[in-house]
Structure formats: structure tokens, C-alpha cells
Length: 381
Ligand code: FES
Image 1 (cartoon, protein in one colour):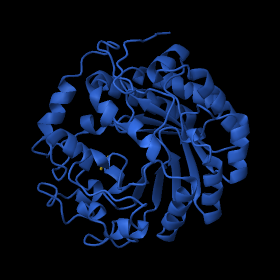
Image 2 (cartoon, protein in one colour):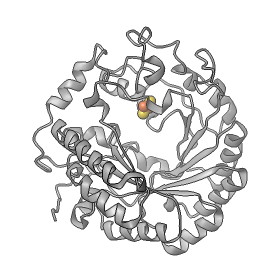
Image 3 (cartoon, rainbow, N blue to C red):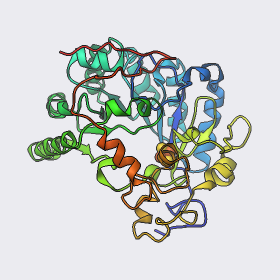
């Protein structure tokens, strides 16, 4: 497949194949690793209406979007979710719901099925009620298990997503065992990325290298045991790997995110980078934003890459890493992602991992996702 470096993307087609709709930042949970903006509550009054979201769907389909994730916040907080799924399905999208499971009653599940929903990604933080509830800051564990049971009972393809950090990484084995018992075919262990709430809590959340290596060993053991019955996704996090991740498959290459207020972004975190001109679908045609806007063109392709990326043999593999991480750690989004061992700023990542103490749980209060709230509550099973 031809790769453009001057033009629209690296997929050879210039299409936003992956569309993420952040329907709302509202959420009943208070996760300390949430990647929503710190000022998430300011967006509640600015959310796109049902008709505006439908227009987004039509416009995105017209420029080639195919895979669609309804996400948030908690997308089930939107009463029009089923209507939007039906509209998307009618347009030919492959629809995914990315949910905590809170609010997923059997009635809504049936309505989503009737609307044409194709797949559900459910998050679960552990198999232990007290731990899950403490981690998400709500009585959520029982609801999540019931949601998992219902999703399987109604025959949806399901991705079980476990965000991984210091407090639960040692429970990966028992999570796999539990998921295998339920008949889950795909489980994703997502080492959390440090933006927004997670960045604020990074020193407490980041697992040790020993924990990561042990988790990898456990995952490989289960892979051998379960074979094709379950796909287990787990990769060593970029800050321990020394290689940057191919974030978003490259800026403005195939990913298009629409925030609750209609702002279109190359990734969910892009607004952490100051000085960029963000455009809303309320003011500009989506096709123009994707193809022409300065925001999407800023770091698209390979020609803008700084050294050492520009002359690196791996530049088509990792595109210089993550722009948001580069900004958050070095102050300049155009720098090589410091997760890369060749970055002149790599010491910043090395300092962060050197500061990770032994896995003593909750030595310091984690800042929970709530305006100004700090919680010291923690329950251990
Ligand atoms: Fe924004 Fe990686 S999260 S580019």
C-alpha cells in the first residue's frame, strides 16, 4: 500500500477509518487514571444534541470513517445512545460501545442490540469487589459483573478491558481465569497512559518493572494454556520498553475523535497541547477539519519529524511516538517522545520510572476524578 508522507495520512487512503465519539464526559465513576480533561464538568452544558451527533455520523461516513466507538465519560449517560447507534448502523458503521457497564440494564442491552450495536468493550479493574469499588470510587463491581454476564448471554462479541496499574497488575492471572470461565474471547490489559488524571497520580499508579515482567510471564503462561480460546492483549508499556508507541498510528492518519462539545481532534488528549487551533463541527465542515485544518496537518505524515526521528529507520513504525506525551514531559509537542531511548529527553522517563517505589498500595492519596476531590479511602479484600 502506498504511503504518503506529504499528504493526508499514512494509510494510503486519507480516510479517518477509526472514529471515536466522546458523547459525554459525564460518568458516575471517579477513576484516578481517567483520561478525560481535568475540567470535564465544564463540558456538560456544551454537549452536542442528538441531531448534531447524527450530522457528525453522516459527515464522518462521507469521508470514509468505518469503525466507530461510542465512548465518554460513560456513553450510557446519554439517553439517545440507542438512537445514535441505530443511525450509525444505518449508515454502515461497525459500532462499538466502550463502557464501564454502569447503567447497562438488560432492557438497554436489548434496545442496543435492536439498534444494531455490533460489539461491546467492558472495563473491569479486578475480580475483587472491595478493590474494584475502591479503585473506581463507587459501588460498581457487582454491576460490572452483571453487565459482563448479560453481554455474553445476549451473544455480543465482547472485549474485556482491564486498565493496568500498580494496584491491580498482580491480579492479571486471576482476571484471565475469571474471563475464561465466562467465555470471553478477547481480553485487553491496557497499561494506562499518563495524561490528565493519570498524570496527576502517576507516581502512585505506575507499576514497577518487576511487576510488569511478572505480568508478562503470567500472560504468556495463560496464552499457552488457553491457546485460541482467548486472545490476550498485553504489551510492555512504552516507559519501560525504551521504544515509543505508534500513538494513533500517527497524528491525523486514521483516528478522528469528536469531543462532547463537537471539537474534532486527532486523539482524545490533544487539548493538553497549548497553542493549537481546535475547530468544532458546529463551526466547520468535518471534511475540511480532517483534510485541511492546521490542527490535523500539524504533525501528520513524516516530513515534520525532528531529529533523531527524521533519520531513524523506525520512523514509519512509531511516527516519533506520542505528541501529547512529548508535550507533557518536555513542554514541546514537536519533540521526539521521551519514551524513546534515542530522545535527548529520555532521562525524564528514566527519572519517572526510577521514582517508582515498591508496590506499597496507596502510600499517598490518589486524586479521584471529581472537581478538587482528594480521597484517601481504600478497601482491601
Ligand atoms: Fe495525543 Fe498520543 S495521546 S498523540
